[in-house]
Image (cartoon, rainbow, N blue to C red; front, top):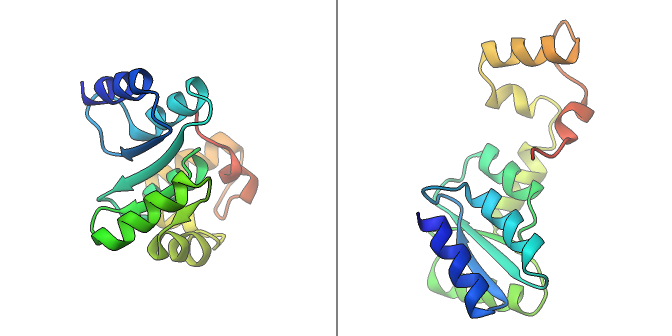
Length: 143
């Protein structure tokens, strides 16, 4: 499993920066990010993904990564992101920032992510008869 190799390499090498692909076979990249931060104090994480959909960006914003960059970013931007995160800073791409502030800040944002059936199930689970659901429902961090 790729995620297991990433974990083992980070643990054994003692490196303080991990460039983490969020689409790893065998373990979700966000799950691995949480494990790395919990078990390797001081490790800095820069997440990369080929996915740029709002759900992926929302998941990254809820995680413990110190930066996020699309895989399509050029080498100059990647270098800037690595240097920023390595110096205890945070780096989030323009696309990430735009999606987080413009799209995900809208109360109906999750209605766009969920199918009609998923929305019905969520309404039943929260005791609501219809959308929009209260923001508190979406403020929970998935574990």
